[in-house]
Every structure is written in structure tokens, then in C-alpha cells.
Amino acid sequence: MVGSTAPLTARWSNWAGNQRGSATAILRPGSPTDVAEAVRSAAATGRRIRVAGSGHSFTAIALADDQRMELSELNTTVSVDVEHRLVTVPAGMTLHALNGLLARHCLALPNLGDIDAQTVAGAISTGTHGTGAGFGCLSTFVEAITLVTGTGEVLHCSADEHPDIFAAARVSLGALGVLVEVTLRCVDAFVLHAHERPAALADVLDELPALIDGHDHVEFYWFPYTSRVQVKTNDRVPANDRPLPRWRGWLDDDFLANTVFASACRLGRAVPALAPGISAVSARALTERRYTGRSDRVFCTPRRVRFVEMEYGLPREALPEALAALRRIVDGLPFKVLFPVEVRFTAADDIWLSHGYGRDSAYIAVHQYVGMPYEPYFRAFEEVAAGLGGRPHWGKLHYRDAASLAPAYPRFADFLAVRDRLDPDHRFANAHLDRVLGGGAQPPDATT
Image 1 (cartoon, rainbow, N blue to C red):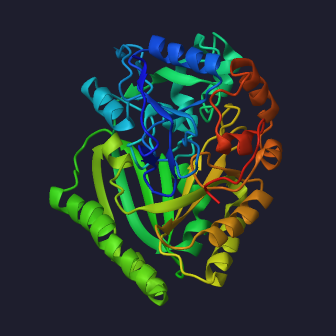
Image 2 (cartoon, rainbow, N blue to C red):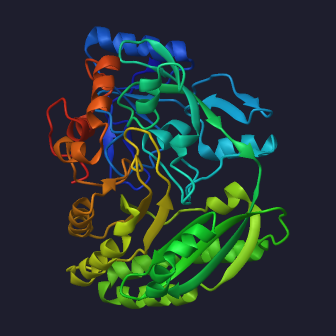
């Protein structure tokens, strides 16, 4: 059996809990052949399929209004080519499992974001990225993909085989087909030296070009209602000679960043007037630290405090103007903001729907603790970001539609042409994709 039928009460929700829905059936294919059979069956009966991964997108991108497909049982060959630094894995494998697999073969991904719970398919389909002026999003590491199209055809794509599909499918929003297998380009395993320090926002902005050029990876967090930031740089070093003591890792990354911060957020939600003071204390509580560690363990940290998020990729030169406007927005809101603002950097790439297509980018991510109002905050920031040429992260909340997104992506029409070729009946659509890509009725999105 390709899948199992579930009652409407079998509900699904994303990690943040802001997207919830029910599917008429749940499909758990065990092989690419099962996926193709499921798609052909859906085509014959006029049904739709939406693939759901780990639920780490904040938008309704994974919500299924008909059949939901889960890839956790998908079994394809795992292949590790150490000599050529290539790994081929099932698309439903999590980044956490992939990082462990690579480490066992003395390999690593060149860059990562700050969480590793996403599936490989989900991460690349939404343009998940880390930070580093010399690195694009994770999709730039993809060497080949195998997907099942809307007609049930199994296609293998790379820069040499179906190159136009490859250019579109590396960031596809799940609109072109079901990814079943992904080949990624890796590097030799490496160690990172992490340096985290408090600083003044004005000083960081003044030294930003030198900071970005002088380190492999740079990011910083601005604490609302303050002029303070926490800066983090990661650089490759030859030896893991300064590991973080276990007690310090637990204190900073588990107890302070999760347990204590969760309590502070609950207090700020209950008594909003305390939020500026909480932000100020948080900015001062994070002290300087230096340590070394295995790359993925430095890049990725635990995230147990629930929040919702919007993130925009901007032309890098627009960052100071965007941050100045954001500070005015935060100060003028009728409610308080409990989460810091994250700023990261990526290199230009050539993937059609990548946020970094054709330009070096600065990313600004705004967050709000679950249960707190956020829409006026996010909409106000989006207006600023859109006016500066910003592109919203596909996995994070935004209010754009196809008409406003098309001018932001020079290859948007080309992507839609590939979509119409691979999935002519929009078998993989849902209400969210109808809104952001067009081609169907556009009811209000659950994110709004």
C-alpha cells in the first residue's frame, strides 16, 4: 500500500503551532516508485498532494488541503563518495542525521543555519541559509536531485541533465514535484573557532564591511529597546584545541538561552511593560566567550522557545537604512517585542527563486514569542523591506502575493513555465502556493 487513510481528526501542526490543518489521507511512500504511483493515482482522481517535512516553516507552505505525503519512511540508497566529497541521501533525511552521517566519513556541509531539525528536502526547497559572505543558501551545495513530477515521471536533474529544471528545483517551494533523492557537495570535516561578544549597534555597523570580510561567518542579534547587540563570528581553524566545557555549553545554550529565556518571555507576555527591561537584561547577561568545536555543532544550537518569524533578504547596502526603520517601528508599536532581531549575510547565487539570486544579501529576521501579537510588527517591517528590494524567506511569514513577488525575482516567469511543464494541473499546490505563485484561487492565507 502506498499510503494510509487518516480521519479528518488526524491533525498536523508546524513547530511554532501557528499553522494547523487536516488532510483527507496521509501517504507514507517507501520508495520513489511508491511516490510515482501515488502521484499518478492522484492525477487519475483529480486529487492534490502536499509534502510535509519537519514543520519548521512558519508559513502555510506545507499545509495539505487534500492528501499529505510524509517522507520519513522513504528508502533510497545512501551513498557517500569521500574521494569526490559527494553524498546522496533520501530527501526526507533530517539535517541532523545528515550531519552525523558526514561526520562519520570525515566530511561536512560547508555551511549551515542555526537549527538542524529540517529535512533535506524542506531545507533546500525554502532556501534555508546560514551566514557567511562567501556562502550562498544550502541549495547551492546541491549537485543533483531526483524528483517525481506532477505526471508521475521520475526525473534526475543536475547542471548537465535538465539544467533548466535544476536551476528551478533547487529552491522550488515543493511546487515542481516530490523530491525523493538529493546529492550534495561536501567538504572535508572542519573545526570552527566561535567568538561571541556584546557590542554597541553603532560600532558594529561602522565596522561591518571589515567584520564581514575578516571572518568566514558573521551574524549579530540586536536587542529591541536597546542600542546593544551580540556579535558572533565563526572561523575555520586547524585544531579543536579550545572546546567549550560541558557545563558552560549547558549553562549558555540550554539553561540561559532556553530555560531562563522562556521564563523571561512568559513574564514579558504576562506583563508587557517589563519587555524593555527584560531586553536590556538579556543584552547584558550574554558575556563574551570563545570556543572551538565540530562545525555542525557550532553552527547549530537547540531552539526550544517557540516563536513566529519573518525574514527578509535585502541588498547588503540597504541594511543600515532597514535597521534604522526597524528601530522606529519597534518603538512605535502598541505592544512589546520580546525577541532579539537576527542579522546574517550570504553571497549571490544563480538559483531562480533563491532570495540571494544575483546579489550579495543581508538578512534581517524579526521574531515574536508565541501568544504575543505580531502581525502589525511584521507588516510594518515588510513594507520597509519590500521598498528596499527585499525578498521574503519562503519558509517564514510574509504577506506578499505573486503579483508583488514577480518583480523581485528576475526568473520568476521562467520558474512558472517550468512548473507548468512539470505539474500542468498543479497537483502539488495548496492555498499558500496559489497566493505566492498564482495559478489558482487565492483565499486568505492562514498566516494572515
